Amino acid sequence: MNETLAKWVEESRRIVFFGGAGVSTESGIPDFRSVDGLYNQQYDYPPETILSHTFFMRKTEEFFRFYRNKMLFPDALPNAAHRKLAHWEAAGKLTGIVTQNIDGLHQKAGSKRVYELHGSVLRNYCMKCRKFYSLDDIMHTQGVPRCTCGGVIKPDVVLYEEPLDNEVVTRACAAIEQADMMIIGGTSLNVYPAAGLVDLYRGSRLVLVNLSGTPQDDRADLVIRERIGQVFAELP
Ligand code: CNA
Image (tube, rainbow, N blue to C red; front, side, top):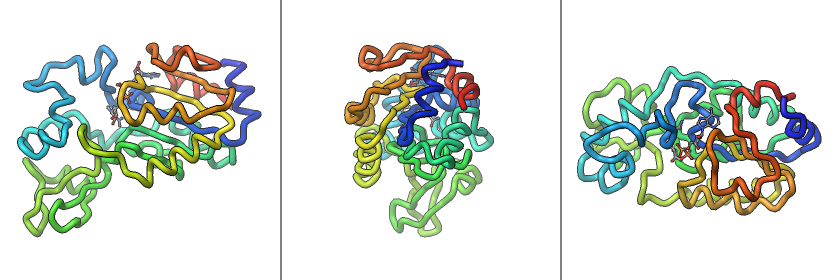
């Protein structure tokens, strides 16, 4: 167990966690930038292109082929990192989770204050009439999912070229600004504007738990290069 991290967690009362795809790799969901991540596999188009607003509008069927195969993991379960964060929130030590993930695993683990910067695959809306559809609804369709009104159903995920939700960003910023400890984990901190939010933390307990280096390593008070599920499993 990392003694410094354990001590800081014990002493802190307003921990904020900022995370990304690496938080869910131990749940069997591939990330983007690891060697076995989606960016290192071969497709007709690079994933950044497929996951863009323009591609969604122009090649909707192809978007959904990739999306269903590579982004939907309905059977994935929370791992030790998700569970420990939910435990800290229930214990009154953690004020929020700011995540770039779209898999809903933090909520599945029991977390309540989750700020999903990039939306969630669990929510889907008709682009014409705004009717809601669940992930299960999408799993039971083929090709381009259509609403009863005939409109195309779009996942409530923020694609490249699309703006973040203002309210989610405002709440995430407030939590980070008021944090007495921030743990950044499982993110390459490469995707903006999301990655820029971590600059709002001004405290002296900035912890980074990530397998590879990030642009924030030099600024962090503690850097741990281990698997986040394993690290968190050992914490109080
Ligand atoms: P990324 O750029 O793929 O970076 C992931 C980082 O996590 C890398 O630096 C890895 O070294 C690190 N990592 C991987 N596994 C672990 C582990 N077990 N313990 C510690 N570190 C680990 O992903 P980001 O989140 O930084 O990029 C943002 C994108 C990825 C967002 O837009 C997400 O929506 C998108 N994404 C989300 C999911 C998901 O919801 N689970 C999956 C794939 C991609």
